[in-house]
Length: 354
Length: 79
Image 1 (cartoon, each protein chain N blue to C red):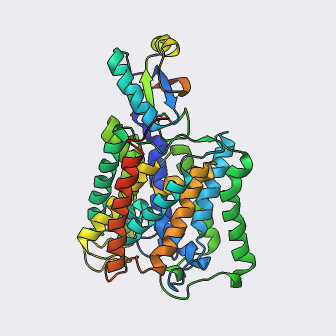
Image 2: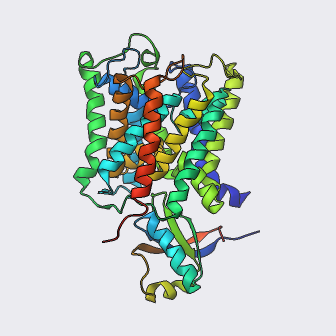
Image 3: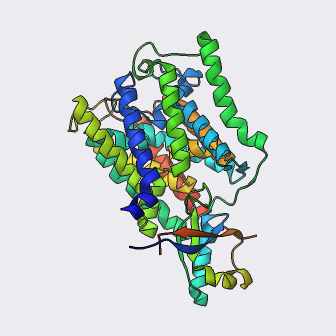
């Protein structure tokens, strides 16, 4: 038991805290089964910044600012804040955009996927199967030598760029709220008081930085090394959210009528398969990209910007699904995403050495 | 009860380098295995080469390995 807790205590604690935070945020205002969703929240931020004009999903989500800032604070405290980057940033931007296209086909990132499972949304189980399939596809290329090339040391100023921009923009939304878009109805209008969201983000960001929580890394380590410590966090979130939803009376098992979700199984599967494959190529899930960006990793910062741009594309070009199901444009974009994933995987696996 | 033991952890700049390390070590019959980078070593969730500390000289003196990012010795329950 001592050994188990020594190896897994911090990751289990992180999973339980994320689960409790998700339940609390939903109870206090966030949309159902969307206590935390990195994809949805970056999409809302994209809307708040007027990068897309879908009126129902525009709000500068304080949780994202909190996650990045929380990770930065704990990284500084642990002397782990390091400027690092230069590993194929343009490719990472593109992959980040397609992560968002896959996530908005499914309607959630890997974190929301497990929160949806915890709410009884069986559509998310198909998403999970797709996510694992995508990761396994990516692992094939990892084993054959895929790499986006090494990162190099960057200055502290460069490393602080993204965290600083998020914090400054967030302060602007408080001081000059009229300059930003805010949804009057729909998911973007549903949120707790900003300070609650911010504190939840700070706590989760700090814990994720310490525990190295990663949805993709958990499955990768389980498959490649039979190391199950990271995946424990995954399990802890599901168990906590199931118990919480049962207590709150909000556990509704089934496929139909799930909140902010659709029941097209094939496209739920394919959307998350794309997220899984792209995330393996990027070296982490969307949550992990936020944490790494907070630690000073400028490659992850570029990926986060790519995800925000991808969200704008999704809503400006009709790629995002809705409760009615996926769109034709969205299906074309996801298929294009698989072509991009295959091309990038091949190009960076069988590259010519200089 | 199983106790923590000291392990040699070699980290790399890329996962591809870690994979190349595995191939080279298999060809040369060198000890060790691939595993996740321990939390205590770096905050990256990358892939490292795990071996025993007494084998350190094999890796420090060997040639044509992929470039190491660092060599660490950490206490771990993992064998």
